[in-house]
Length: 68
Image (cartoon, rainbow, N blue to C red; front, side, top):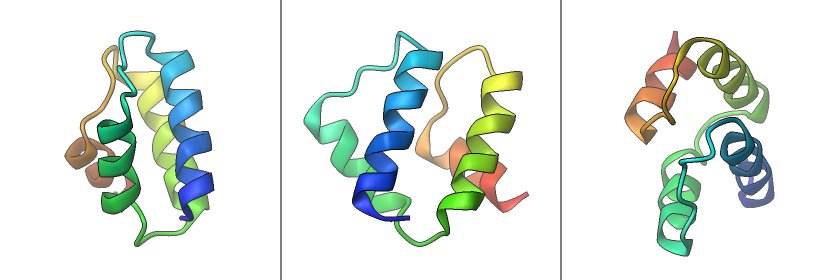
């Protein structure tokens, strides 16, 4: 997933979970730790999480769902 794709996905996550605080450092961590997978897998993980998790996911939880 590219930087721009990650930032776009984070914007959707912020809309789904308003408590998600997207300060610049948080965005950089997400970009760094989610750049090794395809964007379609990331979108699938987002879709699953938004339907099942009431709280914003951690990077570890996001990667866990993406790998499933």
